[in-house]
Length: 238
Image 1 (cartoon, rainbow, N blue to C red):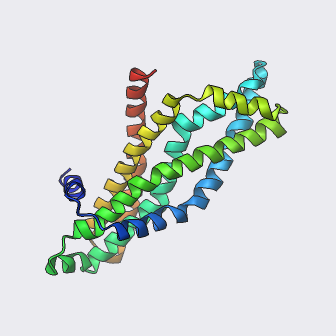
Image 2: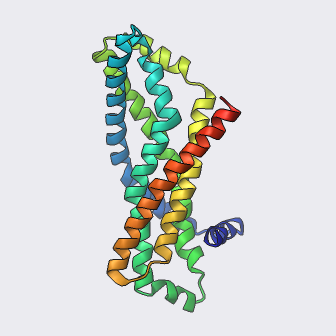
Image 3: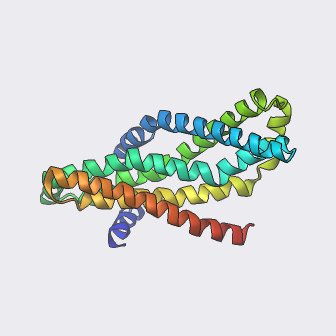
């Protein structure tokens, strides 16, 4: 908590290096887009196929569109994208900071009178918080497209009906509930990965161990926080 407090303190005091934030947003976001697109498209297709087969048993095949759209917006896209982001960008953050720490570069910044949290951690933390919601929106759009392809070309639903049902079934609460989760996921992933990297020990072997630990802890934290946030959101909004 002290480490997170130091990060927030630097941000509130305006000690943000925006050029570094933009660089980190490119490394964390742009280079993760392709992975998110491919995984989200596959998720949308699988969800559409499973939904089509299941709903067809009950004569409700036309409800594929609401099933795919609501599932992606409320749960699947925020959680799956957070997993992908943790495994790629989160691991990269931990490995970078861990390597700097084991090579005593972090200590060198202190000797030069520069706050290492401000210089190294805050740009990566902010980039994570800004990039993950964008990736989740991309995931939602691509996943819905995957469900659309299945609904129209495999389940033989009219295209106009599928699009209309998707739009009618999705409300503001569905989108913003997913975005609230994404905001907390981004803070959790950034916090865990930056912390593990910043306090890495044990040389090259330690970098690998702390990186693996950071990804595993991020996964568990996302799963547990998702359960808590889902209960809170359903209690408030239903």
